[in-house]
Amino acid sequence: MEKHLSDKFYTAMKKLEPRYPTKKALILPALHQAQEEYGWLPKEVLAEIAEYIGVHAAQIREVASFYTMYNLKPVGKNHIKICTNVACCLRGADELMSFAEKKLGIKCGETTPDGLFSLSEEECLGACTTAPAMMANDDYIEELDVNKLNDFIEKMKVVKS
Amino acid sequence: MSQTTLFEQHFWKESNRTLEYYLQSMNGYQAAQKVLKEMSPDQVIDEVKKGNIRGRGGAGFPMGMKWSFIPKASEKPKYLVCNADESEPGTCKDRQIIRYTPHLLIEGLIIGSFAIGCKHAYVYIRGEYVREAKLLNAAIDEAYAKGYLGKNIFGSGFDLEITVHRGAGAYICGEETGLLNSLEGKRGEPRVKPPFPAVSGAFGCPTAVNNVESIANVPHLIRMGGDAFAQLGKVDKSGGTRLISLSGHVKKPGVYEIQAGSMTLRQIIDHLGGGVINDKKLKAVIPGGSSSPILSADEIDVVYDVEPLMKVGTMMGSAAIMVIHEDTDLVKLLMRITKFYEHESCGQCTPCREGCHWMESILHKIIHHEAKPSDLDLLVDVAQNIGGKTLCALGDAAAGPVISFVKKFRPEFEAYIKGQKIYA
Ligand SMILES: Cc1cc2nc3c(=O)[nH]c(=O)nc-3n(C[C@H](O)[C@H](O)[C@H](O)COP(=O)(O)O)c2cc1C
Ligand code: SF4
Ligand code: FES
Image 1 (cartoon, chains in turn blue, brown):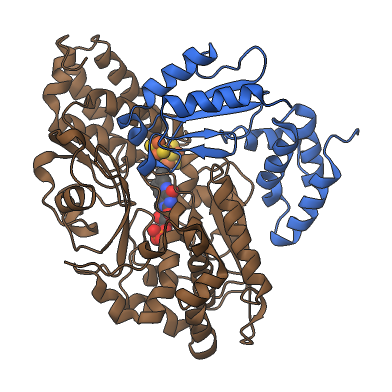
Image 2 (cartoon, chains in turn orange, blue; image 1 turned 180 degrees about the vertical axis):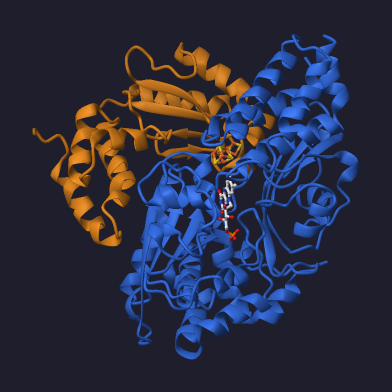
C-alpha cells in the first residue's frame, strides 16, 4: 500500500505507543496527527491509520465520525467556528454569525469557492466569561466583535500559503 | 466577608504557570513530597474525606468516598483519569487552572494516584483546548525533568506517568463513561452501569474519574489539612472554595473564587459581577451550567452551593452562572439549549434521542407561531418522560431546562402560540 502519512506521523505514534495499554487507544491521537498533516481525513489516510492500528478501516471511520473535530470532508484553509451557545448568544453571537456569512458570502456550514474559509457554528468553547468567542483555526478569539472578526478575515486573505 | 482564595490570586499572569513560580510562591510539590514520604494511601483518603471536598465536575460527589471505592487489592492496574473535557455550556474554570496553575493539577494527580494505587494517570482534555493541552504538556515535561514524575518520585519508590489525551469535539465525552470509551479509542458513548468505573473503568480496570478543579484542590487540602480545608466551606458537607464561571448579562463576567457556600446567588451577581449590564432588570439565572433548571429573578436569594440549590429544585453543576436580563427572549433561548442537547445526544437511548428531537420540533413550531395551545403541555410531557429513563444524565440535562422554563415563564410561550410578538 502506498504510504500517505509522513515519518513524522509514525515517529509521533511510536513515542505514544508505550503510553497506552492497547493500540486502539491510539486512534484519537492518530486521527489528530493525521489531520494536522492533511487538514482533513481522506479515505486513504483512514485506511492507513486502520492498518497501523490493526483494525478495519470501517472501524476507524465509525470512530472518527462520532467527533465533530475530525473533518471527513475537505475544509477551507481557515476554519472559523463561532460559538452560538447560551453565553455567547446572550452576548450577540447571532449578529456575529450573520456578519461572517455576509462578509464571506457563504452560509454557515459552507466553504468559500476559493477554499480559503470555512464557517461553522460551534457549541460552547469554554470561553463563556469572555463571550462571545470563536475558534480561528487552533486559536481562540474572545470578546469577539465585528471588528475583530473582520480583521481576522482580512488578515487571512493576504496570508499566502 | 473577606474571602480566602486558593487559586484566584495566581490567575491571569502567564509567568505564574512555570515550575519556578510554583516552587517559590505556592509551596509547590511539598504536599506530594509529604504524602509520598510520610503517609499511607489510607491516610491520604481519610484526609480528603475530612476535607469534605465534593466533585467539581457536576455531580458534587464526595471525592474521598469516590477514592475509597477503588479496590485496594487488584490484579489489574488502576487508573486515575482527570476530566478536563469542560464541555458544560457556561463553564470555563478548568481552563484557567490549566493555563495558570498547571502544576497544581500535576501535584494533585501525584497525590491522587498514590492514594488509589495508580501508576499511569490520564488527563482527558477537550480537543478545542489545543493551546491548553500544549501548556499542560509543557508543565508535565518540567515535572519529569525535575524527577517529580517518572520513576521513584522523591526517592519514595512510587512511580507515576501522566499522559494528556485530547478529545475531538463531543459534549458527551464529559460524561465519565463516555470519556473512558473515548480514551480507549472508541465512540464516546456512555456505558451501562453497573459496572461502575471504580470496578471496571479505563481499559477494564478500576478507575477514578475526577474533574480538574477537584484534583487541583488536593495539594491545598493536604497542605492545610483536611479540617482546615473543610472549614473554608460555610455550609455543611462542602469544603474548600469554588471557582465560579459568571457569564451572560453581567457587567463584569469572569471566573471568580469564593469559599464554598459563603455567598448567595444574588450577592455573586451584584458584588462579583457588578450587577446586570446597562442596569437592566434581572429576568432569570441559569445557576449551574445549561443543564441546570432555570431560576426566576425572585428565586436568587439562595446560598450558592450544592445542597441549598438542590433544595430549590435546581443544581450547582459545574458552578457556571449565566445571567439573563429583561430583554431576553426565553423561548428562543430554550430552543438554543434544546438544540444543543439534540445535537449532543449520542442516540443510544430512545427516550433521550427521540425526546430531544421532539422537544426541538415542538419548540420550533412554537417559535414559528404554528403550535396549538396543547403543544405546550405536550412539550412538558415529553420532557418528563425522558428523566430517569436513560443511561446517562444527558437525558435529565435536556429535560430540566424545558420543564423549568415552561413552568416559570409560561406566558412567554403562550404569547408565541397566540401569535403575539413580545420581542423584536
Ligand atoms: C452529559 C454530561 C457531561 C459532563 N461533562 C463534564 C465535564 O465536561 N467535566 C467534568 O469534569 N465532568 C463532567 N460531567 C460529570 C462526569 O460524569 C463526572 O461526574 C465527573 O467528571 C466526576 O468528577 P468529580 O467527582 O471530580 O466532579 C458530565 C456529566 C454528564 C452526564
Ligand atoms: S441519555 Fe442520551 S446521551 Fe446519555 S447515553 Fe442515553 S442517548 Fe446517549
Ligand atoms: S457559550 Fe460560547 S464559549 Fe461558552
